[in-house]
Amino acid sequence: MGLSSAGDERWPDARRGGSRLTEQFYFTTIAGIALSAAGFAGLITALRGDGPWSKTELWRLRSIVRSALTLVVVSLLPEPIFRAVGGDEPLTIRVTSAVIALVLASFIQRAIADRREWPGFAREAGLIVGGQLLIQLVNIYLASLALLMLGLLGLLLGTLQVFMRVIRDFRPPGRED
Image (cartoon, rainbow, N blue to C red; front, side, top):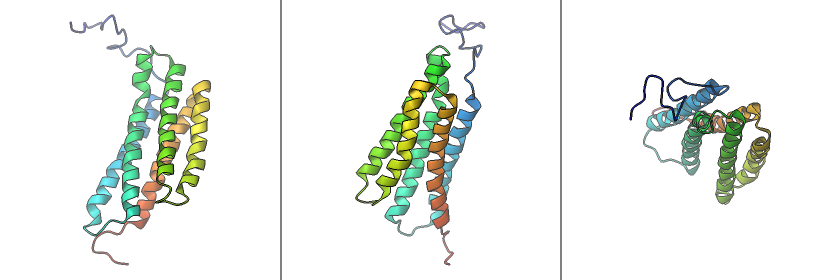
């Protein structure tokens, strides 16, 4: 059973495009920037050389890749959710905010689990990420597109902050200062 030129009746918007999610371009732009950050982390790894990696360097690179790829997936979720809920934008915002809240809660959980290795980090992460988590939990009720967009931007800024720390400490091979 193939699609006719008019589309499948069970999925009326499958071929025609149907209604559009507000600010979809913003979501895909965030995903693209996050994917670029993950790619640059790989490039830094390749250019770094063969010397031993410190525990901090490994944590930073893993953190960049993990958070960047998570952000790519989360940023791409609104469109399929929007289609799955029949074009209900407030519900799409609520579901996506709930997903962001779960991601933020897992960041806090990971920071607490790592508190012995990274003293003070759990407190700092708890304050910053906890505030973002609270906003997304409130947004599950409010369904504000602006708060959802800020939530994604907050995730991106956290990733880029760690990325900038890696860049700051980067020493290409063969160059000793």
